[in-house]
Image (cartoon, rainbow over all chains, first blue to last red; front, side):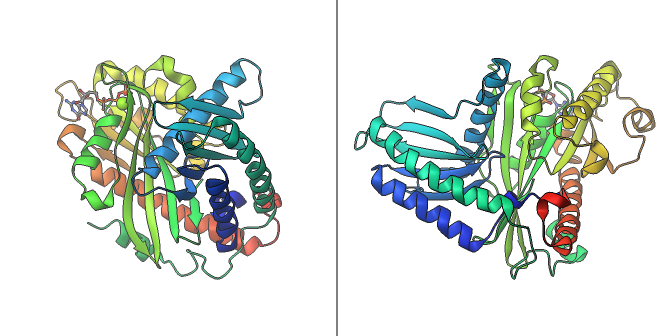
Length: 160
Length: 209
Ligand SMILES: Nc1nc2c(ncn2[C@@H]2O[C@H](COP(=O)(O)OP(=O)(O)OP(=O)(O)O)[C@@H](O)[C@H]2O)c(=O)[nH]1
Ligand SMILES: [Mg+2]
């Protein structure tokens, strides 16, 4: 079954992208991205060309899954926030709406205090967006990838 | 759970390689990684112990090509096969779209195969899933070893419902891409079906669940 959150429409993408672009500037961050808990990258902003965002997305989700597992063992709710401090790069990871992960990578040009502050606001914005996504149906609006796909098309993908 | 991005026109699906310790799950991904054009696959991420055993997961993004102007991608994961890493195994199943069960053909591993398959069923239940409900294929690996059981024997125990099955020698690549193609095809057909059914149902996705 396809959950509503696993389909992202164009307008939703623009809203998410807008929110993280704003955060990028406001927090003086290097990179901001949003990943779903299954490890799929939803949107990214900033200096992403030099980063392997696909691997980062999968590892971040793995990280959240692991700490979520630890939390469960401790009968805690999830640890909603994580911070890792490196020599040059620092990473702030925030769980949003139990469903998606907001990641901010920053350096000496910013500070943990500033990032925390700005992340809080963006978290609220994103929460609203994702809650709306969760309530709307998955419909066959224009652009449905499967409307015109035949079994032959699928087979052709795997011919080699 | 697939991820469909209608803006970037991408469809990503998650496939998990499951099976007992040392059956050859990581080897499957390594072979795929080593024998695919660089532009159609990403980095192979391995979270492993010093002795090359999978500790958490391996991850390989794999690009298939375009359908209807949509980029399609498979995200391949392996689980750690060692019994005591069960908590991690459970986590990796989150959002699974299709599963490859890799069995070790050696007689000495017969019990481990069965245990791993039972464990897979049990862990899927955590997500309210049954093996019969998800796209699923079996690979009998290590066919090159003299102590390998016959395919009939393996099938009798591991494949009662006769899902697609493949013989493999993963480190040489035999059967590796055949297995991948089979699961990929099943996943996309399944996706097409459930997306279509859901769109037809229309209104309320909560109710459809
Ligand atoms: N003879 C033979 N050896 C194989 C074959 N496939 C894999 N191997 C070897 O088996 C060993 C274990 O393979 P891995 O791919 O690391 O096993 P795994 O299933 O990932 O193991 P865990 O990470 O512990 O779950 C390696 O030394 C491989 O080279 C095969 O078809 N035949
Ligand atoms: Mg492994």
